[in-house]
Image 1 (cartoon, rainbow, N blue to C red):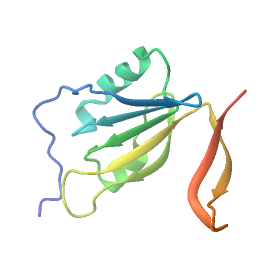
Image 2 (tube, one colour; image 1 turned 90 degrees about the vertical axis):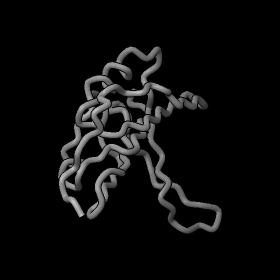
Image 3 (tube, one colour; image 1 turned 90 degrees about the horizontal axis):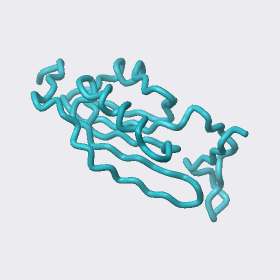
Length: 123
């Protein structure tokens, strides 16, 4: 299997925003297919949005483990990231607005720790 990732020759980002707003939280999801060549376009799309999303979910970024750890999206910090180790393509990342602060880990109804965390906007 190939270890290097080749980006799609279509370097235009298909901006079909999936945005969910509720309780003053906006989530932005983008299916990217090679973020390396679309980062500037993604940042521009986020910059011109009427409301800055609290969370950004990116799928199909095509980064390696090392690259995803170095990924830097202006005004956001990495919350979670996944990159395939063997196959090319794939990968996902969740980023949070840099103004958000971690509040607490939330327990589920069985009083066991879950992977749900609560964040709040800095005052």
